[in-house]
Length: 404
Image (tube, rainbow, N blue to C red; front, side, top):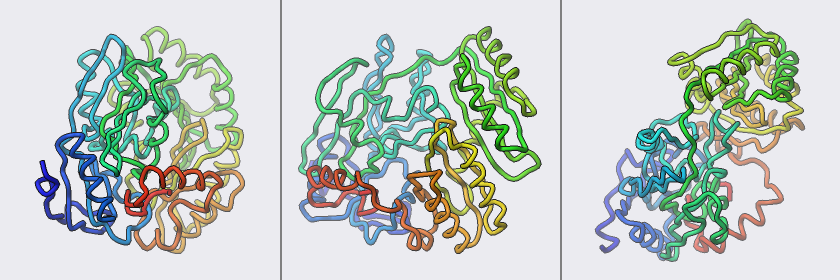
């Protein structure tokens, strides 16, 4: 099929951070995907690869977007090897549809997303991870094989279909979190986990951040094995929360919840079923609401200082903060306020010695023009640019919106 047959005119529904692309390609095969990227590279067309469109507002504002390449027609579950606990899936399939298909064998891909229409390709490209990261890691940790479309029209594969393999360079880890700047993700092979027999979530509320930090350390040093272990900070009489999910057999779940109750000092409640699902869904809402979302990381030992920093921002009265994060040292803050207050809040986070890798995930175009999305250049960026120059020598992918 010729490239012309894959192209259509862009519409308002295809906008990338406000920019309507003149052309949209909808490849229906892996080779057509690679051919579309080769066409874009030949004409040096700034290009964005689109999955479900849930994170198209992430990244620097584009100067121009000449082409969007959609993975909507590459949305098939290629293979589910339930005996090996692995699956191969095309990039355009949504996480929700994939887990619905895997559930027939009581298995799932342990990734949480705030977006119902998030696709596998987009999740891997952004390394998007939620509370299940505590036990199972990020998408980067779950990828065992991958097929990529390069801008020279080639399809390349790395990894394999079994958990223990050494087939080729680990391109899966390379492109995880690259935000579509290196290559197009065609399909991914993941390791899976069984759906737990039961689960329950303990929530403890605190008025004192130091007390929460002490309880986090106590639970972390115990033999309790959480499926998710998060913290949350927002306005209220008890502004700090500890959230601990146990997912295992009913007897082991009850025993571990009882052990956790004995270790925490805050006011405690235990949730199951729909209420439990709702509290973890709310843990992801920092990515979708408010005026801006900032992601950052910290050393776990600096948790008290991080919570104090967030309280300091809150006390400024110029910006409202809702924070949701993993105790392992990564989280997001939802900010609401005027433009100057938002700029000051991002700059305050970047000036702190207690947090690092401060990225403005979501915000208005004006905010992203006043505050660089990705922050100051890091020492690793030189190496990353060298890799991009090899894989995308024309520099077209993600239209200069990504971290490199």
